[in-house]
Amino acid sequence: MLEDRTTAVSPGTPWPAAYPKGYAVVDVETTGLARDDRIISAAVYRLDERGEVEDHWYTLVNPERDPGPVWIHGLTSETLEGAPLFPDIAEEFSARLDGRVLVAHNAVFDWQMIAREYARARREAPVRQRLCTIALAKELDLPLPNHKLETLAAHYGVVQRRAHHALDDARVLAEAFRPSLRAAAAGNVRLPLLECRPLTEWSDTPRIGPQARAGHGGYGGYRPSGWRPSRKRPACPYPNPGRYEDGRPLKQGMRVAFSGDTSIERELLEDRAVEAGLHVSTSISRLTSLLVTNDPDSGTSKVLKARQFGTPVVDEAAFGQLLRDVAPATGE
Image (cartoon, rainbow, N blue to C red; front, side, top):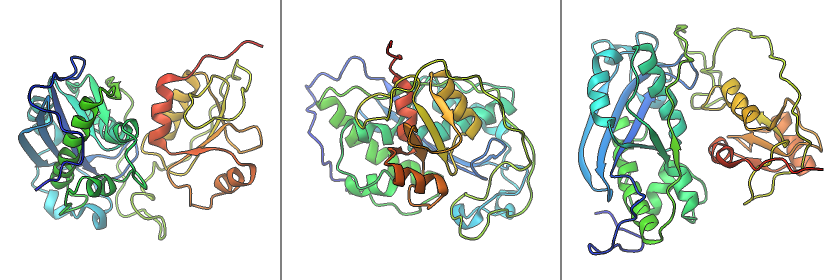
């Protein structure tokens, strides 16, 4: 039985009026992390406004291509051969999402994958807001050594039975989200809700066979193939205000660099940074305000230089939250 380690919310306690009325806790397994990767399984736990489970749903999805890192998700081509295509399950998926906040661990990834599948099917996912449980854990200041799903689950005493199985991952997240939601309500903590906009950028370029290199672990080797010329971006119109300080917002003009794999296509992530008024840099120097990387122990040249110069480092999820509220440039 789940041990609720949060402040109790009694039945008579008013629930914050600004909180959503229902949630769809989602997990998808995919062929990889890139723009042309596909969903191969999906699970949804529908929760009411207080986080209580209403029902759950799970399906395999035939990606019509190589299933990717089978050693992670365990779904082979033979297993997926008779599964429905995404357009076949899109209506049922929509019914599970409709009118609810999409909740996921690193929600931007799940949302991007779902939105692209709907775009390929010439449809639109009925999702208007998402909530990342990583961001919520940070809002609650939970004492976690890292923000992996298994760490969040362990904090609340939730037992994970089948990691990287969409249904079990969604169950685990639903059980961990409930006490998090109650803690937020008890403390009247603002939920870190983000707007979901339909995506139109996607690719159907098929890639057959394992492409991950030894030592890259996870989905690291499943990246878009082919050479693309670098895009020349206009100069950032704002002066560099200096380094990012933990606990404070980013400021327009800050120089931001990226290192390693990202769940969002790198160019899209860079575009968002530029749109927010940041300067995207391809290298690290003493002038760099922030390095964004999901693997700070990778030993890449950028990570090593960041250590040398004392450049602040955040992961992709934290950077996504910081992009929500970039402070305007200050006048000279």
